Length: 107
Image (tube, rainbow, N blue to C red; front, side, top):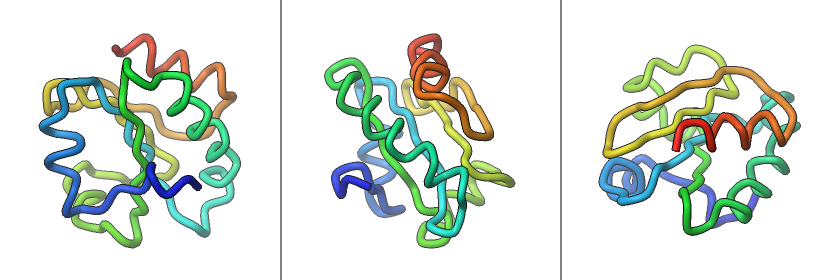
């Protein structure tokens, strides 16, 4: 995982809730096989959508307060935030095209 995608609870407010751009947050964990499977897709989407949306990854084990606040019950869970609010949610893995389409549909 690229270090620039990792997001801690301390930075969540500024990077996600106060962002001028839509934000895709991937809630994941190091022990989650499907999370690891989509990690390259998330990194590619982050590069491809630069300037249109921000993309971050939140480790649910390291940022439990954020995971609890957004009722993350299964991972991977992807949430699109717009104007500081949850706009869309997808739980489970998927192809890069499907995941990118989920983000684009919710811009």
